[in-house]
Image (cartoon, rainbow, N blue to C red; front, side, top):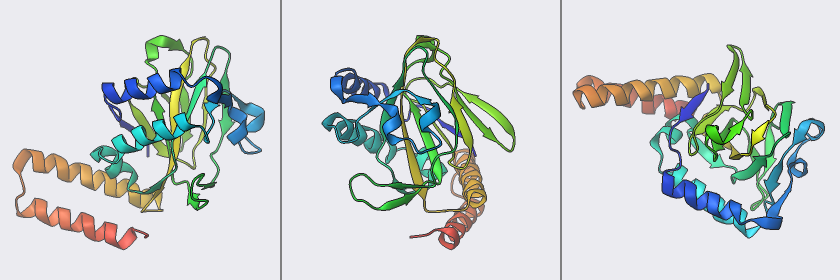
Length: 228
């Protein structure tokens, strides 16, 4: 499932995050520090040190926006979100083909977090750089993603993906993972489709008997599949 979420950050939130990252200075470090054995040889970017104060400030801004975004909640059904990380690709930088690790250790709690959903939040407008596309490969083929600043893309953490080389400008983004309440991807996808259809019907005809019944079905399925 590949879901684009427009304006996950509104312009004010985006400006606040970018201002902090612009002023981060020495908090920018080699991106390979967080890569697994598969990623180290192919990862060429910079990222914010997870221990830096600026990381905590930007994480708070991003998580605060996402917890109020209905499309993100509907698509990811988050149980726990790994604290967002922040990276940048200058000219000549890229990230080769890889698959995200299945488990991450939460940097603040030490808890193990299963990575069901991967997320990339674009912080740079596409006109500001060439290249730098997120390329996701799934059973339906290759998907190239380059979204407006403030937009978010969600995709299965099981997908092989890469970031093409930046040939002009600089590409900034936030990336993180979600442990969903619904582990099974096909079940999560069906719930998202059902919720989307219910919201569409509600907007057209209101909460009639059939819409209420479908809403009940949605919650009963979620109750069956959700993990605490």
